[in-house]
Structure formats: structure tokens, C-alpha cells
Amino acid sequence: EGAGFAALLSQFVYGKKVSKAKWLCLPIIIGGVILASVNELDFAWSALISACMANMFAAVRGNENKKLMETEGLKDRLGSVGNQFCITSILGFILTLPFLILSEGSKFGEFVEAF
Image (cartoon, rainbow, N blue to C red; front, side, top):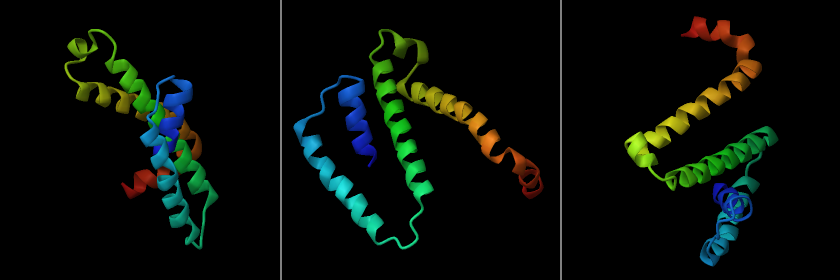
């Protein structure tokens, strides 16, 4: 499923050509996800929507990292590609904090007690 989001974003948002072989693999991957989900008796739509959003943002992050790696002199400034991925992961975490506080902030006291 994540491969589908990555291919669609690469092709239509970032203008990067996706090979015919990758497009031909997508129905097999998506079909496998559908088959695995059909047998699930207690299907949660919120889980599906959350997983789709996570896959979409992972695809955006991957495309942005790839675009960033092509920036002239970036590897010299950051030291390595690993540092770039570390920085984008930390930024992603920081950007999710407001959503965490909005959705789970009322349970912070319970977290502190459990911790």
C-alpha cells in the first residue's frame, strides 16, 4: 500500500517517472493487502485511514529526502545521508507533537502515573 502512495506521489506531484515494472507490481502488492484485510472480522476504519495517512506522509518524506539529497553541497554540510534522515525524523516527531497534545493531552496525568 505504501508503494502505491510513493509511486503516485513521485509520478504526479514530484514529476519523477516511475518505471513500468513498478507500476506492474503495484496491483500485486495492493491485491495482497486487500486479501489480507478481507479475512479480518473486526475491521477498524480508523486504523485503515491512519495507516493510509502514515503511508502517504512516509512517501512524502521519502520524496523530499531524495530531492534534498540532490541539493548541491548538502552532504558536505550535514556530514552524511544518515544525518539528513535523522534530522527529518526528528522534525517529523516535533511536527506530530501538537496533534498528540490535542488528541491525548487529557490523559497526560495517567501517563505520568504509569511512568
